[in-house]
Structure formats: C-alpha cells, structure tokens
Image (cartoon, rainbow, N blue to C red):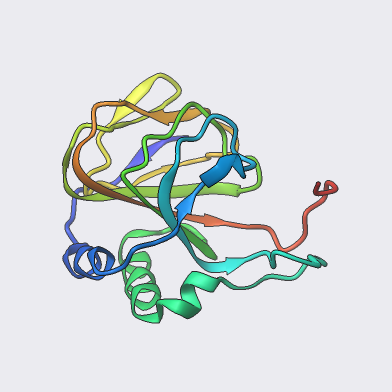
Length: 172
C-alpha cells in the first residue's frame, strides 16, 4: 500500500538548522553497501546499529549526539506528520536515488521532502509522487523506488523508518 498524506509545511526551522551544518559525504571512495548510489551528503538520526561489535542492540546515532537540536526538531516533525511507528530517521541532501529497495527496513516508511527545489519526484511501482511537503507512506523494503533526475535547487528528504533490533541474517 502506498498512501500520500496532505501537504503541510513544518520544515522551515529544520531547513535553517540543516543549512548551518555540513554533513559528511556518504559513499566517498566507493565505500558503500548501496550499489549504484551517487555520492551525497546525509545523516542518520535516532537509533542505529553500532558500527563495530553489533550484538543485536541499538544505540543513539552519532549524528543525533553531534546535532541534538536537529534531532529534537526531527522528532517534533515526526510527531506531527508520521502516523506509523519509527525509530530511525535518514536525512539526505540533494540525493537522487537510483532504483533500489530498503533491504533492512521493517514495515512501512514515511518519506517527505522539503526545501527550495523542483523536480526529483519519487517513483514507487512506476507511479510518480511529488513529496515536497507531502509525506508518502510506503514499504521501502517491498517496493522498488527511485527519484527522477530533474532536481533543481536544494532538496532535503527525510525518511522515518524502523530499523530492527535484531538482524536475522548474518551481516558481512
């Protein structure tokens, strides 16, 4: 099931906060578990798996600890726009995602975008959605999705999702 919610703008303060921070580049030097993803700037807030010695537990992410004001604003927005359970939040800046599934997410995710941009719509099951200030709920683990490659301006996307406490398969 894919469900688009009503358009609302709750993102002005978050935009200001995000513009003051430079997040590290993801996928630099080809180090990634996401095949075919371009280099982009992003951050993970909320719970995450520890980088080393993962034993089924989760901890507050490095970005949540480093930028608590952004994490608090993301939680406020999540309380306003996200009617589904979540424990992690991925924030991306100007990322044009290639076709993929979110292999380790559990259940539905909510994606919403904001900023001074046009284009870069989300395509889920060959249906194009404009997610600018309009949250979209879908199962990213089940449905292949990607962004159109016509981004103009500055776009932030927020994905509220559940990361499992225990991974059933062996991780590399």
